[in-house]
Amino acid sequence: MAEVRMLHEDPATAGALRQAWRYLRPHRRLLTVALAATVASTAAVVGIAPVIGRGVDAVIARDRTALWWTVGGLIVIVLARLLLLRWSEVLLARAGERVVQDLRDLVVERLAGAPLRFVEAHRTGDLLRRATGEIADLALFIREQVPNLLGIGLTLVLTTVLLIVYSPLLSLVLVVLFIPAAVGVIRWFDQVARTAFGRQASADAAMTATFTETLAAGEALVVVGRPGEWVERFRRDNDELLRASNRTIGAQNRLELFSLLEGLATAVLLLLSVWLARSGHLGVGTVVVFVLATRNLFEGLAGLSRLIGQLQTARVGVARLADLLEATDSPGTDAPGTDSPAIDLPATAASAMDAPASDAPTAGGGGVSLPPRGELAATDLRFGYGTDEDAQVLRGVSVRFPSGDRAGLVGTTGSGKTTLAKLLCGLYEPDEGVVTFGGVDLSTVSPEEIRRHVVLVPQQVHIITGSLAENLALAPGEPDRAAMERAVEVLGLTEWVAGLPGGLDASLGARGELLSAGERQIVGLVRAALVDPPVLVLDEATADLDPDVARRLETAVEHLRPGRTLIVIAHRQATIDRLPRRVRLVSGRLVAGDTAGDVAGDVRGDVAGDVLVDAGHSVPSQLQSDPIVSDPA
Image 1 (cartoon, rainbow, N blue to C red):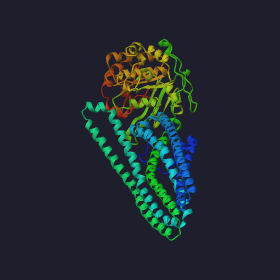
Image 2 (image 1 turned 90 degrees about the vertical axis):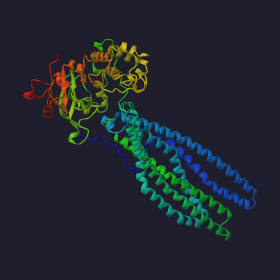
Image 3 (image 1 turned 90 degrees about the horizontal axis):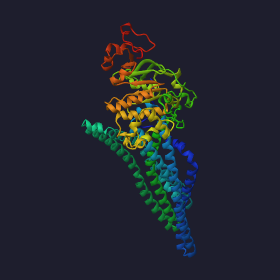
Image 4 (image 1 turned 135 degrees about the vertical axis):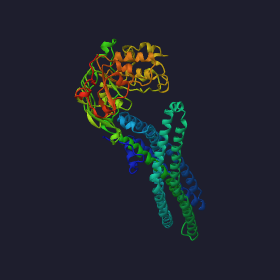
């Protein structure tokens, strides 16, 4: 089967910061100016020590003029440092927010265009963490860690040069005492940091995913009286996050050895400096400069030690974000276009539903277009959610739906009806076989073109928090209010909309909580009418519908049916009885059987495993009395 590209829980961090440059490049001018200000600010800090040293020499020499010049120079340097530092912070904050905005837009665009199988294969919390938390970490990296890294690096270089100029002997002692030990500490930290920070990010994502799923399933958990199980599951994930965080803290604590090294090196340098000053080899001002510069050096190294842990967090976040962007980066996963105009629905039902689909824009991408009308056909489809034979959902399914056909997909739960519908709509790509519309292979057509010709109204229609009009605006083409009103009228739903407080402006509650399952599907049908597709696939709600809602839903379907192919994943016997043709699925295979009793009950087991039929295949003689395709009523 075609494997789904899975995200890595702990992606490699090698080269992660170089990958981040791809997303920073559009803002390089702003970043360059900000970093230049940081460099100037750092240079000002390094320049403070020599100025103080000159002041000490002026005091010893009782040179008041030189002392006042030194004080004035020190004030200028301090003020310049403050102004440059503030300016760089503002510029970096602005650059960071722009990067965050661009990355969030890119991630949402990629996820919106990603294959449905990819989205379904990953936990929502993990995708949410990568799309928000990792981007926020990158913004923090830009605002704080990049200037800190540059400032510390420049401080170390300039301070080292200053120390060498003032006393090569003391500089050599410092190098011998401190540098080898510091390199050893950093290597010791790096041994555990590579895995510790990655595991913490993975555990954080798992905890977020569990928390998100618990909130979504809140009502179901309360109804069955089992919320404690999910609370316990969350606690396990939270405990794992705590253990991972403790490992990360343990790794960071290794860097605290820098403080011990700093104290030892400072004590040795002070003793040596005093001895050299008393013996006349160094002036007092030189000793003061060296002590202050050494202090700057150690503060820079201490800051670098803290920054190493933060950089590791940034590397992990960038690696996880890059993994998501790489997994969703393919020609077939571009975000659907939003510039296609809404279909203008005429006033009458007949003219509205007979409007030619050729008015829709031509396909993007490769430029392959679908015909205005045509037969929707599947040939030898195989599809599974894993590599094992037991994971196969569809096994060699072939079926045809001629233009204007009215058919129902029937079968028991788990037989593969919804999976087949998603394949017919181009939401899934088959592992084997082909789906065509009007003879054109859907795998060669852009997703935008497919959506204009084949529309699925699922059982659970997605409703956003907002008004009815805002939810109808989710239809492709950004339909205006006039188009919504015409669609409502054409489907015979004017009375239903008028009964809502506010009509099209009625609030549907958080995620549509004020709507029943049937009313959600009504919203989905109005969206479909705004697209005006030649093929409509309706996954009927399994919940018991209020009689009034069921009647409105049936009326809307009947108004939407003329001039198009209608495929219904039927769950209610009343719906099945109204359909002239039934396509039965059992255990991922098409089988014969079309009687009401067969639909309502279980299909015979001997048929489920052996019989493969469709409108174009012969049927075994023992089943020919019960064909899968019945003549239209």
